[in-house]
Image (cartoon, rainbow, N blue to C red; front, side):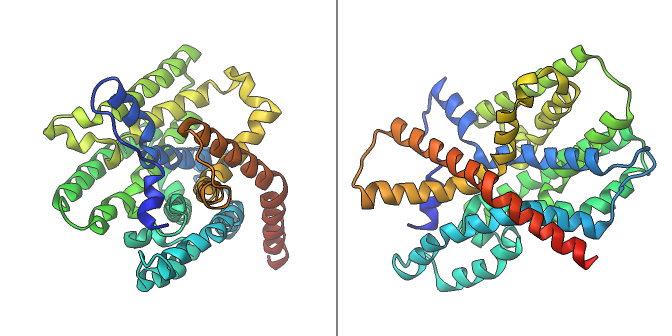
Length: 356
């Protein structure tokens, strides 16, 4: 198993005509979809940690905040690294598809949530966890950003955040053009380097401040914003390959997909009481387990592929194989959420409380 094979689990042969190419692009952009959680992270953190008034930007102790975020993410993050370690070692010592120097870099950077700062190692070790490297930069900056946000009126701060997303998209598009034909590690820099995703996080902060301290909108308005974001997101994913050259900066991988994602989040927040089925115990539990699903879906896929083909000699039809993997991912993520992650998180929080 090579690092290229890990990425290949996401992609198959791409249809070239409508509607097949539209559906393929709209459903296969896993990396770009992570931007949703970057914007959502800024929104939720602001909603939870903002003060009771508009002039209080951050209502928590920094150390407690940082440790709480580590305790929330670390147990499942390290579980994902642990169960994919055999495949990483196989790539180096058996398949010889990964240089030992890259193994050393990955072993040093990934456990410290730093893998995205050196893009050549992003794909090596449970590659979906690259986004946590970005998230930890967000957490480091959040107290400062939240405190700075109070210096600007919420609407003006939102305008600045929107402009920052667009400017960064131009910069990313320029980097893609500059690295065209260069080694993948250079183009990966434009995709994964954490500071390039900070504008999406700031957009989430700005949207939350408008939501908390701006005028209350009607349910109809929130619904319109939600649907506008949904339609725009689907269109951006599905038709991005048909954009003219002067609009290459608006392709989803430049980060502009954060704009419709922001509309979806803002609209859904205003309609929170309208989706009663989302408040059911099952949906709440699955929502809590979604992080585990994200981190564990590649480890589960790798192990299922090895067990099915090597140990059991199975050759299932593609749709059935995909259904089995989805069921395994949901089941193991639910077990992790029920029995492993919460106790470890509580243990980490107790350690912090005793040392304070």
